[in-house]
Length: 425
Image (cartoon, rainbow, N blue to C red; front, side):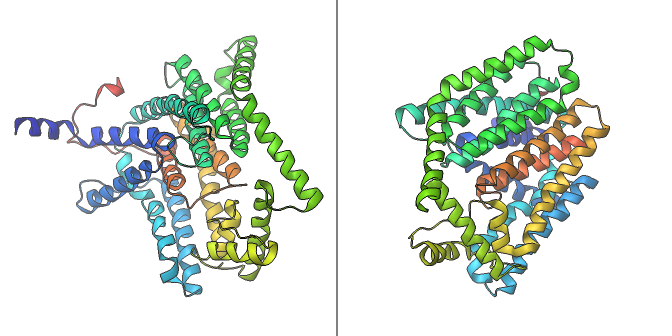
């Protein structure tokens, strides 16, 4: 009984939030879908806490603006199912929207954590995730002979969430919010190599553009660096990535060129690139049939399978159109894609206001999180998934919640909290 009582005393709300945050930022590239269970379980627990008045609903204006956009997107999907009289068919595809509905609830409970503590958790957890992801990628690449997919079970999703972890390491090293700069740079480099091993070309582009964005955001701090040292560091990073990933990069670019030649010369759609272009053509045709409200979330697989048979004489099936906004257009029409775009527009606007007017490094770090999230998701969505995957949806909410809170939220204090653990020291 004494031991049980001691454990209960240790599990204060602040400590629980700390452990929860560590899992949310460490798990995505390492254990994949486990992060969905963690985030959604935390969201459900937060509902119970707020309903029992053990937490206050935290109302910050940037959070409210994001909540309106997120809930509007959920409503657009529900409307699409109602219009198509397909609620029963679409129900399994609508249930995952609960992850989005948890946004304001999770924000309210997450914001009891001191901002400095949360920033350190994000940076150190991302650093650990990058190192473990590199080990997984090396094992999968050289021992199993497969594209690296970490614990995500999907090379594209693995690369996308790992890109965010890499950028958190870079932002932590450049912004001055964490002391272990060398370790963070090594972790970011290891994560970048793992992304190369994933063979996900679109995330290579997202990694590059996100990295440039982080450098621009932190250019004031970079002015103190010796230019020659900075250029030497960037050159060394490029050499290491090229040395470890040259074969993978060359193979993936060769596949791209081969696919392009097959499509252009012979009209062969039975290649990686050809299938994507075929999916886009099928999706655009389906959008023109139901432009305003779409076909409903449950119609996608049937439309794709039928489209391949009718338009390309191929027997193939996919769960999405390999373009995030096109998938939204088909499922929920113009209403759905406008509300989905609004989520990223509102998030980017919130971040821009902070970066324009604030000098506090923690607030700027939070805004940087949102900028990196928006860039990574939008670029990756050009040939992949934007929302609708359990890992990507959970990570989207994790970054929007924590980034918005750090950038422009206020902490909710709890009188019953005890002293914070050593992570804050």
